[in-house]
Length: 99
Image (tube, rainbow, N blue to C red; front, side, top):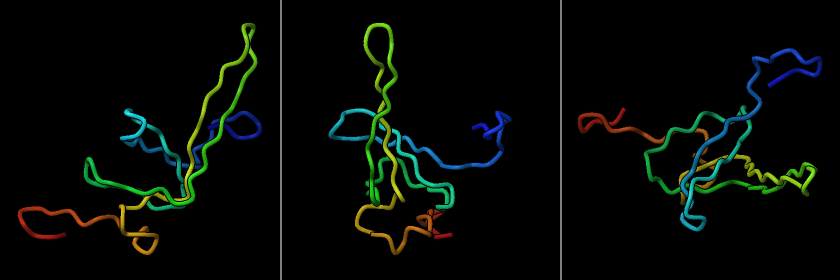
């Protein structure tokens, strides 16, 4: 990221996660605000997006336009957990004991 004056910024403005999408049959990238705690879920966990927004950005080219789409959400939570547990990462099991 760069600041308005063009200098490199160390500030994290959002985090992007790669999620597998059954309906799309591929990986999709979802960005959430940086003020939301880091998410670390088990591989293949089912998650829900809170207030997802899908939009596009188009850039005119000589032959038409290049279109990129992006997906943003307010949060990513484990499916069925709702927003109440979104601030707590899932518990990890180590040697049969919960951390």
